[in-house]
Image (cartoon, rainbow, N blue to C red):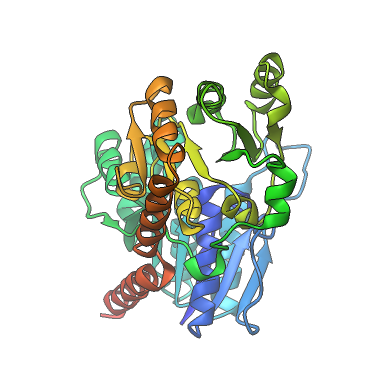
Amino acid sequence: MRIGIVCYPTFGGSGVVATELGMALARKGHVVHFISYDRPVRLEDVEGRVHYHEVRVSDYPLFDYPPYELVLTSKLVDVAQHEGLDLLHVHYAIPHASAAWMAQRILAARGIFIPFITTLHGTDITLVGRDPSFEPVITFSIERSSAVTAVSESLKRDTYTHFPVKRDIQVIPNFVCVDTYRHTADQALRQRYAPKGEKLLVHISNFRPVKRVEDVLRVFQRLREHLPVRLLFMGDGPDRQRVENLARQCSAHEDVLFLGKITRPEDLLASGDLFVLTSEAESFGLAALEAMACRVPVVSTNTGGTPEVVEHGVSGLLSPVGDVATMAANALHILGDPATHERFREGAFARAHLFDVHAVLPRYEALYDAVRQTAHA
């Protein structure tokens, strides 16, 4: 099958999942064409079956805002027609789904019908998509998609709540390639970041306000009253400077490290002892799943799709949003006893296998087959 994948090329969860999906499909023998304004950060070739097409927007003085959606539509038409695509799979509704619909109409006028699948990832529905100026377009694009998937039951419910959508939405969760993750600590990294044998807390995010990253720092401060511990922040975003300033004001600022964006954080994740996720909203919680694939348990808020990923009492412990005291107590419970810590490590690793690519990929392939059969019926 020849599949076109449209995604954002950045470190965000939707782009990472779309990239990993495309490469997994290529390993199964499919030919995959990625279409985006930049090369996805994790994209690698797979035996010549992965291709990248850049969407380049010209800078005309006439436009206050570059017309990316129109240029994307034209690129979709070009790639679909000349590469003989069987279907398009667009990740994140804005503006990919509407661009796919426009491309489908243009191709139909040329005697070519290309079905398209829209995967909803989270903030395209729960944050950006709730802007009234986007609602009519998002609703229309979802209704006109050949199939729609959401990455969690929570996101599916949110979509029906916030949009007047009548059609069926299928839940296919995000996934990881468990075998590609490191499952034991890198001792050189442990020596670098925990030279005195301290416990390592780890957090990865895009540092947006919804992540409540300052709560991670507060959990660290409470936990360090009971255990020698250090904190590693990975990622970057609008709240990073504010959180760095807060960290500099605490007495243990030398034990809080900001490492910035890391393309493949697996080694650092596997060298950690506990992953902390304090978001006020998560449609899935991919960063938590990646930690679990490295045998690292999770302390998290119990919001959105996170409870569908982190099994309370098995792969980690959940608590209400903003309840820093309980999160710190949960962290102490897991890290304070070696046997308990090991039990949670094993639980996290076992849980991650339920979201392994080998379990999830066949569901996408079955959906692709069903969409193609319907299109040719």
